[in-house]
Amino acid sequence: MIGLNVRLMPIPEQAGEPRISVHWFFVPVGFGLIAAGLVCLRYGIVYVGWGCVFLGLFEFLTFGLCERRIRAGKPPEALFTLPLRKTVLACSMFGYLVLFAIVHIKLFGILSGSRLGQMVLFVFGPVIWVLTAQLLWNAIVRYFVNHPPKQ
Image (cartoon, rainbow, N blue to C red; front, side):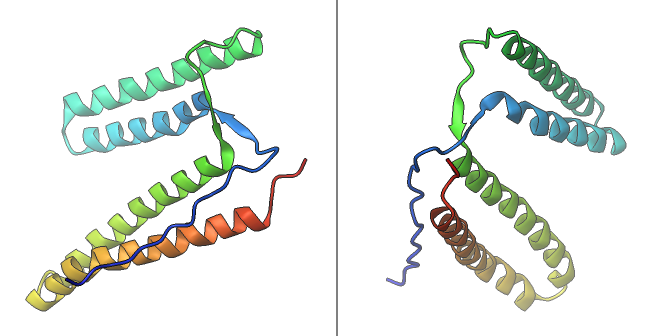
């Protein structure tokens, strides 16, 4: 059976690696929810749109309350931190997935006129995504290994 061998380099823990509080993820999630809500409202999907806008504003409120408690020296017990380099790697891969999906959808619109174009897109599109994602992952890990955190 034909297989695809994809090897992702592990990112090692490095001494002095900075960490990021999880409450900072409320900001981009809030922006994303508000953007999704506005798009839904634009296309007449009213309940989903207002729900997304409300949840986005709730994310900003949650971020503000967490930030206020952290600055007062009493951080919420549920907050935890993540290694910054692993977080950057995961967010980069998620961003690449979204970008590739947008390009894939645009190409499908262009190539949808021919059966051969559709077949090439649906057969080779995922293979191309996996192979390029592997290259991106390994390049980021190599950069992090070659440039350790400053102490």
